[in-house]
Length: 323
Ligand SMILES: Nc1nc2c(ncn2[C@@H]2O[C@H](COP(=O)(O)OP(=O)(O)O[C@H]3O[C@H](CO)[C@@H](O)[C@H](O)[C@@H]3O)[C@@H](O)[C@H]2O)c(=O)[nH]1
Image 1 (cartoon, rainbow, N blue to C red):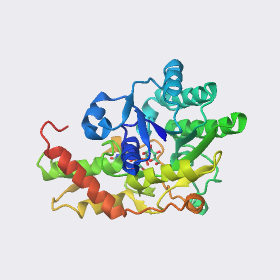
Image 2 (image 1 turned 135 degrees about the horizontal axis):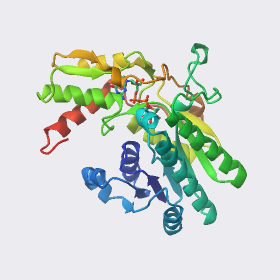
Image 3 (image 1 turned 90 degrees about the vertical axis):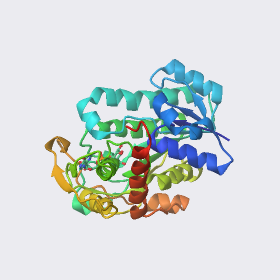
Image 4 (image 1 turned 120 degrees about the vertical axis):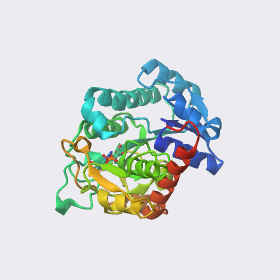
């Protein structure tokens, strides 16, 4: 079976590649943007068929789909950092919507009988009222940033291409996920990296933070990629599924969990430039539809995820020429 992962060197993409390769029954193809990340991932990426493809270019995507004729497409490539979408809304719209349209059109043009999973997001729900918690797939979408709007466009294009053209598209709305290799801009990784830097004397003993009151439903990325596999193999084309562990932590709880794993004595410093114009206060998911359909459930505890993330940064920072 041939699986194509767009954004294979990205956070979820690289974990998905690792999972698919470990199964032994999947030939993994991937598109990527960053050569540096490819090199950092070393041996893992040596086992993936790496494809040069500009996802924003229809011709390039057409050639890729015609050449590989994948059985499965996991579309993970995206601009996924909320503050970047606030600073550059146009780039986020173009980077998130155009590649997906090119993929859908290429699959249509070549009549490739594949299944497609698209990575949508809990950010689409945006403003949520207390009585709507935990959030079901039927909740209204009230986006609070351009990233969320771009994900709604991806989500609804998935719906439309399924209904208009019969493409076997499964939409997953994933809640906050983290773990080793998480990009350092995202809150869990950012705090873990700062603590590891403090331990090594590379930063003054002060952790810089933004809004600590936001509530997130944290899931380990290694559980998320297993969910993506189950979504594409057992999910119903045309349907949309929430994926989340159902945990409820404030960002402050998450910081305290990390601080309990270190002997370093630190001060907490709120940086106003880390606060967002409109933050999403609470994101807590109801993933019962997905669990009933596929049998999925999270296996890695929040505590374990945080420990693995901190250890990841400790090991990265101890390597020569680290960033
Ligand atoms: N990044 C960051 N966030 C901070 C900080 N301090 C507090 N926060 C708060 O921590 C929360 C999480 O921020 P992010 O890690 O940037 O993630 P996100 O906005 O929740 O979005 C993530 O989850 C979505 C749902 O899965 C994803 O779709 C999205 O791509 C991203 O991964 C937000 O409420 C943010 O204001 C900080 O120093 N840095």
